[in-house]
Image (cartoon, rainbow, N blue to C red; front, top):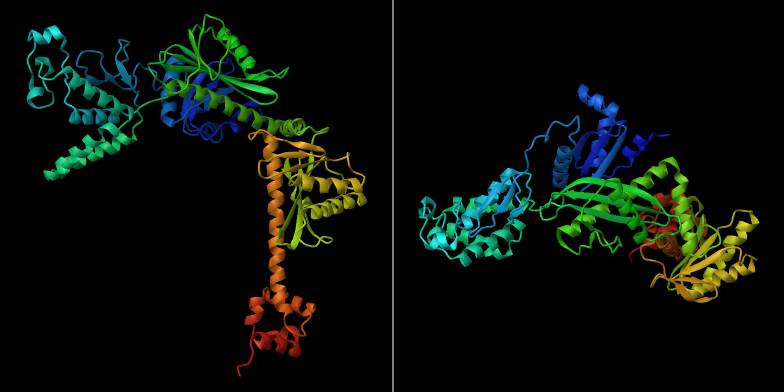
Length: 598
């Protein structure tokens, strides 16, 4: 049996994220990022490492924890936060105080726009962080080319400007600034430029697109193609940068984020802690339901427990739906923007945790997953027993020709293809779906009874009340009514019909029960259509050869076994035909397809 650590590795998601290694003292000894968590973590355990320090690290790993994020960039930023917070023993990089660069629009009259590595809470606007300083510089260069802005640190208050305290500098004469210090540019005009810059930084290029195009065309008209190409290259680079990060947003501070997803028996809740605009902690757990508790009840319990366990004093929490936590905590249900994306990230972590738990259960206890699905189907379809063995019937004919039927068999929710059966309709003339359904259901279970084979717990017929009544009539004639559950599924709205009940059942479109029922119906349809097409094709071939005078069924069978198709028989030479069916019959076949020209 695999160890808990091996189970964790096998069930990690193939998504970007951050992983944390814990030793036997439950201390974080290493934090790493990955484009694909499963591949990256598995690589530590699947090969011999030349580096002795890495070998020691792997030996000390007892437990793995991970956080799923949206992009590789987000993983890099989150890794930076966690390393600075926990200072793991085996992490060397990013332990210093260096931070990623931000773009700042300073809160002042005639705001400056510049790069910084320090986020100061003075009301200024910060955008980022950026993982590439080259991107920041390209962005700043583009802004400076489009908008002449001041770079000086003067206090350009109304009083200072009116008193003529400052004089224009070289930047003004180089046309990089419009001289706000001497009142040569109005504040409203300057602020319009700042508004456009804000849109560019956020990635909203629509309002500024005309300026870009005009600048490129102006350079082109002046035959300054090199300058036009530079603008084009900068725009291309700008399009590749990521202006925002879900992981860090300075406008979101000191917040706890909670979310939950659940199934019939368990809830899976996630907690993200945000401090100073950064995610610094993540915790996901499984909660076993006792009395069919709602998601709201489970999440309220989880929030109280987690905030006590981690001694969280955050005054605000983000959740996906309303919860009751008293008056001391502000509860926010984000509807859009960065706050909404952080809640969605929490939900993603809960979902992946649930998937990993299922995968681990399938490895350790493969039948548990099947038991859960069977229990759910029993409940949803109002059955007396779990439908471990299900059979589904479907009829196929085109304008009444070559009527056939198919029976597919599912065991434990999966196709059992060796038990599939198809039927030629024998007692029905013309396209009569109801009579055909009655015939095949009767033939199927009459044979199972004669051979003393196990009967299914559930029969599904493809169709509505008519087909269901026909199947029920067949069971009644065999004395099986009430012993096997039978339902019909209609294609139009996926209604489920029960014997004697005129009102259909509508299952949740996302339920596993409906998905398995649809799978059965579609599989029966596919299997029946394939058999019908083959039969129709063979009939067409055979009918053409049957038109040849004095050529019997045995001769036709011999020809088809050798030549495979009527077309090849038609193209065969007289000598080839003689070798197969003899001289006299060969002449008849040959002359039928190759009549002598008169």
